[in-house]
Length: 203
Image (cartoon, rainbow, N blue to C red; front, side, top):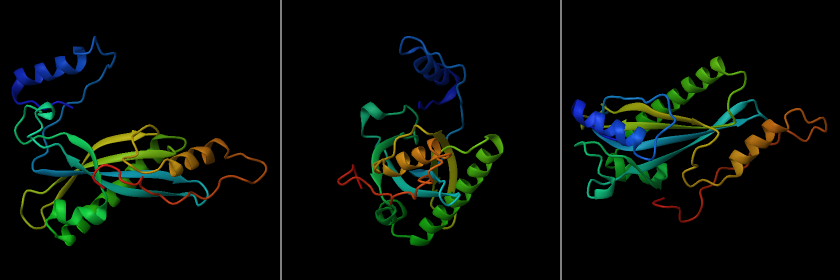
C-alpha cells in the first residue's frame, strides 16, 4: 500500500509498486481515495462451521503505524498503513474510542452487518463459500459523536494472516471441507474455540 497526493506522486507510487522489485506480474492495480480520520483497522476472521451449517467470526483491532516511524511513512499526510500489532476488543475501548463503549458497539454492529453482506456475496459468486476469510475494515472517526464510518479495505480468502489467533479453527474448517463426504460419519466435526496466542504483539 502506497500513499500519494496528485498525479505525479501517483505515478511514483505505481512505479514502485509495479516495477520496484524487478517487475510485477500483476495485471490489476486498485487506486482509491483516502478514507479520512482513520483511527484503527478492524479485522474479522470468518470461518465456515460445516457442522452447524453456519459461520463463526472473531474481531481483532490492528494499530496503525505511527508517523514517527520513518520507514513506514506513507508520504501522504493523514495516511497511515496498518501495523502487525493486534489489540483485542476488550482493550480497544480506551485506546481507540476514548472509553466510548457505545461508539465501539456501533462500529462493531456495522462490521457484523458488512460481514453478513460479504458472506451473501460469496454465496452468490461461489459454488461453496471459502472455509476461511479475513475481512479488513478501516474505522473512520472524525470527532463528532455518532459519525463513525466503516470501510471495507481488504477481502482475503483462505490465505491471510490470523493476526495472533491460533491456527486450530482455520485448520479444522479446512479439514471439514476436505472430508465433507466422509462415509464414516466422523466429519464435519465441531470447531474448537478461537484463542489468541499468548503475548502476541500488542494484545
